[in-house]
Length: 319
Image 1 (cartoon, helix red, strand yellow):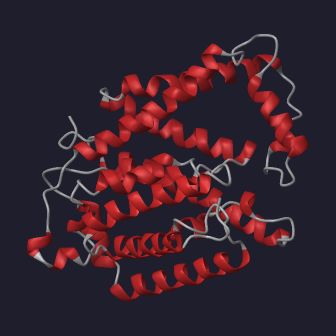
Image 2 (cartoon, rainbow, N blue to C red):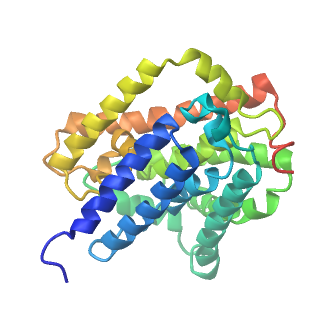
């Protein structure tokens, strides 16, 4: 269909990266978020026509769209320096993100309910672990030990717990206290998936951090205010420089990889699954360890926020 990559595609990729840098510094935050979302959707749709797998992680792409209407550019941004650029802080975009996440899990549970996932004859979870252990070139950290646990009752219970976990979130969102504990269990669930199956769910890190800190429609971004007093602009510039250099490294060495077009942040957080076989093993382990440490850090944030701070979950913003 194309003899070469169209020039307009390269232009949209450049616009996508510029809008992401603008989001990083909070310059015209609302417009930058919308431009980043629509350009990302276009890029992924284009690449999906040639290579499968680019249409995943839709929740990660939707977050800039929803947050563009939340007023998230009022703190820790260039826009915060100008009163005329400040917008009203809204909680409904956060609630909409939660509903979208709940619907994603719900649609994941329905095929399991209608297929043989819950069959007593064998365990679907155990089958996936064995398959991962035998086929994957880069085995997860704990899979060798888990694969030896041939205990049918344990795996059958785990099958039902996974379906229950995915199916119920959409219905417990209105119950604030239950939902708080659900988020904690979800973090443990994803950490287990990383250690057992090496599925990092990197696109959900932004979602969980957003939920853990939360937004307060009356008080605004209290946690960002404290963060703003600690961070200096030179640190942000240094971070941006490192991300850009790392981004260039990926563009040169791994062109058209899943991380090379639409996200500077995922370059830094990419799992070892995107590496080629020629990549040094220590680099693969370094990235895998980084992902695991990152998820444990999010888990610690969860416990710190709810145990030490005691803020009610979205009491003012969403309910």
